Amino acid sequence: MTKYKLIGPITQLISMDGLPLKGALKDEQLTILLNAGILTEGEHIHSIGNYTDLKEVANSLEAEIIELQSEYVCLPGFIDAHTHICFSGSRANDYAMRNSGKTYLEIAKAGGGIWDTVTNTRAASQEELCHGVIKRANYLLKNGITTIEIKSGYGLSIEEELKMLRAIKEANLHLESDLVSTCLAAHMLPKDYDGSRQEYLDEIASKLFPTLKIENLTNRIDAFVEQSAFSKEDIAPYFKKAIEMGFDITVHADQFTAGGSEIAVKVNAVSADHLEASTDTEIKMLAESDVISVALPGASIGLGCDFTPARKILDAGGALAIASDWNPGSAPMGDLLTQACILGTFQKLSNAEVLTGITSRAAAALKLEDRGKLAPRMLADFCLFSTDHFNEILYHQGKLNPAQVWKRGDAVYTE
Ligand code: NIG
Ligand code: FE
Image (spheres, rainbow, N blue to C red):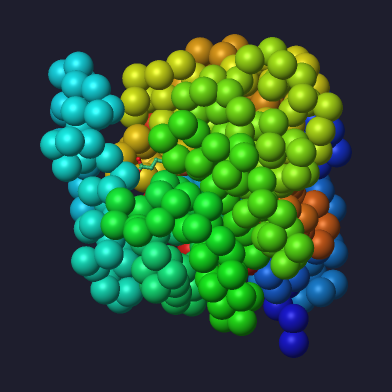
């Protein structure tokens, strides 16, 4: 028998429903339900509305009534649409060297950079990696993140990439949150690969892609399009093969130099992520496409670089999601809410733009249609914050965390 639950009364419920996917948003556009309730039906939302009205429905359905005793603001569960939280080792030394003025090359020569994490991740067992993912995902859950995208990309060989993606798949079975995995075998040309970039990419496409399908490890392919990784020309045939096999595409684009977003638009990628170096040309191109732009303020904070031009992207009519990029190198913080707040202050984003960036628009960046909004038939994933006004959440810049997190109709975290 389906189990119904009514949760309320909730001082303010921000549904994120009925908002456009693209373009600038004003806070006045948000739907705010006062004295609200959420009636759940199993994992999903049956209805939202006035608490007193819903109580009558709940009684007729013999729902369990969970009566809240203080003021709460309710938001959809947050979605971190870009992370690299399957890894081993620390890059604290890179961070210290970078902040002492050492160059990328000097850090790489001293044994740092992505390759350091590849070495450590290869040395870890699948079980150890799985454990690390579980630990980090559970930490994120307490911050209200109920869906997490996780990339491979620290294996960089067929077997090692498979180990990472299998670890993520395994972790998903042990977590309350949902994991969405992505293959980032095209993160860089592995230092120990005996061949050209093209040969490496061909090998990945012909030998790894079929196994990803057979083992149902991911339906998403990512690549780092950058001078230090792969060029647009390198990556075009790789993406073509991926698309022919039915994979969705996402791109690490325009992080240090512009270029990646052009290919993202050309192949109709689901998202183009980073974009710190995007110029007006790329911004216009993205805005005119269906590609979601994903800002990664954690990488700007970690590297001391410019922020993604989020204001310009929204004003040009683009769709903007915000993700943490949590990884041991460029974005070690792993705190989506704090980073989204900081991006908001530096880029002059409305609360509506920041909050959609980590809910409804983040769901679109992962092509997930069943979450990111509070509405009938959506997953009952939501956070309750101990406050009486939603403005308080971003105002506290990551220091006001959820008092309760609900995932698929269950309270999975209580402060
Ligand atoms: O998204 N830009 C490339 N990849 C990661 C960094 C990975 C690393 O430094 O370990 C990123 O920032
Ligand atoms: Fe990344």
